[in-house]
Image 1 (spheres, rainbow, N blue to C red):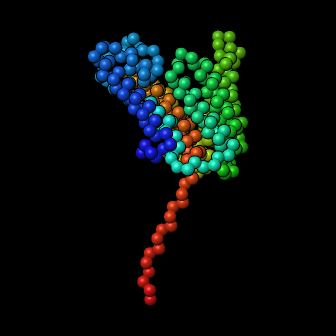
Image 2: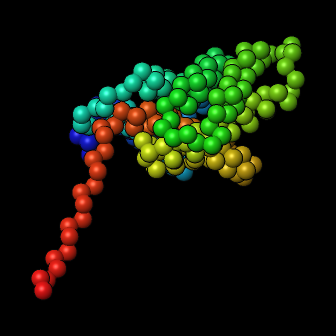
Length: 274
């Protein structure tokens, strides 16, 4: 498995070190009566002072840590090992944009104290991805011509509204919601295009679908999770946040996978001679 990907060894090393640190913090939390270190390493937020140091809470935080370790492995392992394909300028540019978007989505999770800056950065990078995505598609898909317009409306508008956000913001309340819907529509169209293009694996597209649907499930289950405390809601949100990171990173990896070899023809069945 390690040699199957170009950077499999360093990716596994980084993910393993992170898991080891999380495991150490999980062991120390009940012994010291302080859950703060484990909380910060898995949820990347300030500790809830009311959170009790119990084994159920420790296990919930460890589950969030497992999700982040998996995301580290998926995003850092790189394309499949083997002779890299010759990529044109458009594909190289899209790969760079997808990696930048994955990094920005990671920053959104680990720097919660700077939300506006990371939101603007993520939206601007995704605007670039929107512009560079459509030209690399192999097939002339229906409605693909509208992808750029919808995506720029969604992510470009989100960047502008995030920059203007404030007590005296001139932005009407309904416009940011329009941008959110436009970004969701672009994501649906992008996933549809990936499914039919042939260069992206089905598992990658499913990560994207999960990244699209999981927040809706989290919103629906939010009131129920909130009854058990903020910890469960924050842990679920952290796990959901890893899905977009994995989708973006895998989408970039697979553009540089070695060319797939055609399956060998099935052997002809032996026929008796008359």
